[in-house]
Image 1 (cartoon, rainbow, N blue to C red):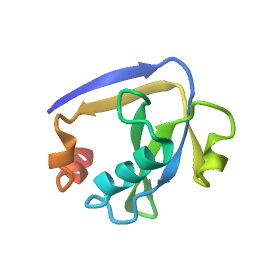
Image 2: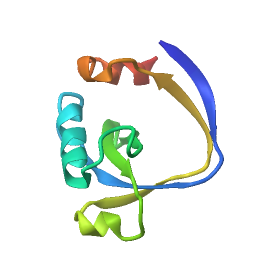
Image 3: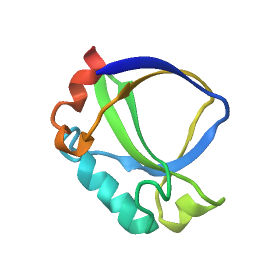
Length: 107
């Protein structure tokens, strides 16, 4: 597992939704986004965004917005990933590791 700092130079507009069954529902949530947008990874950027709310990990599956109003078109939540410094972890073949993604946050 490689951890490194990353500087995001500009805000990114994204849309998607909460993964209700984290971590087991991650792959399904991204499959739904890909199905709705019609864009596979590589044709569009996809992001996993995590946060702690009331002492609990919450995780969102998100797609980068290609045009203004796209979130509304798919009836999904809008978010902004704000520019700044982030700690990142590269997870190779993440689809096979969804049950352990939660462990990266404690490391």
